Length: 286
Figure 1: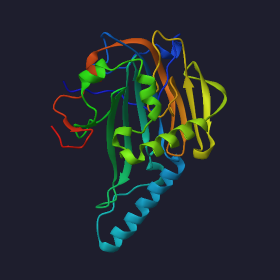
Figure 2 (figure 1 turned 120 degrees about the vertical axis):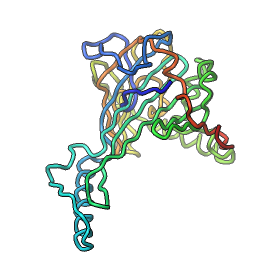
Figure 3 (figure 1 turned 180 degrees about the horizontal axis):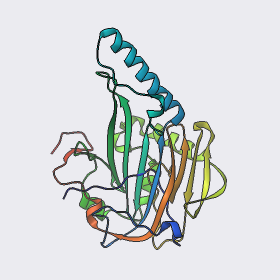
Figure 4 (figure 1 turned 180 degrees about the vertical axis):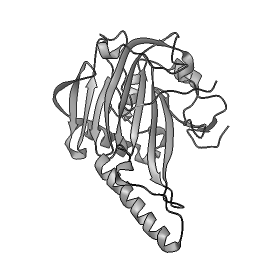
């Protein structure tokens, strides 16, 4: 079954629903079903948005100047036609007792060098993660890489999900064996550098602010009451809980919607039918 999901960025959840958290995701396969999840939708942008908009305008001006000299076509583009957000991002996250699924969608505005027209380049990624590892799914290319046995992820131990997330965004299976100890040490040191910096409310839920001064990063993670232990998802720096907000040089995201105790279909956590799957060991595709 071909699946499409709304997309957004980073993680969070809470249990008592706020008025803003009652709306459910609209993904066709997201519900109804037997898998209990907490759901969060974040939106934001990549990079420094003001700088990205300026860079896009400069890219256009460079293209227009070159094409005029070469006698090529130039599509008009005024400063007020530059999009308000050059790299808009949506990130949805589904937290279950033994798995997390991140569904990320975004658009990059670019200049077509042939005629200087404003174009868009879309990306749509899904990341399925459990104690057995991680599967990265490129929906547009219909390709999946990593540990992509959906049935194995479904059977993964919930008790191991927290320890599996300790590697944060790093897939240790892809790290050469002689470097793993060094990488694990760096991850632990990064986590130790996280400093609690109070709390704030995002999308009606309270979260704890963690700052990583060395990386100029701030993340807000919520730990609401839950019938299951909430695993750490991607971008949480190994911290279990729901990510509600992220502020860092590469990305700025904030939760817009949180739905707790949502029943979803098992189909949500399966690799799309017909996808080319590249194994974690890199021995080819199937």
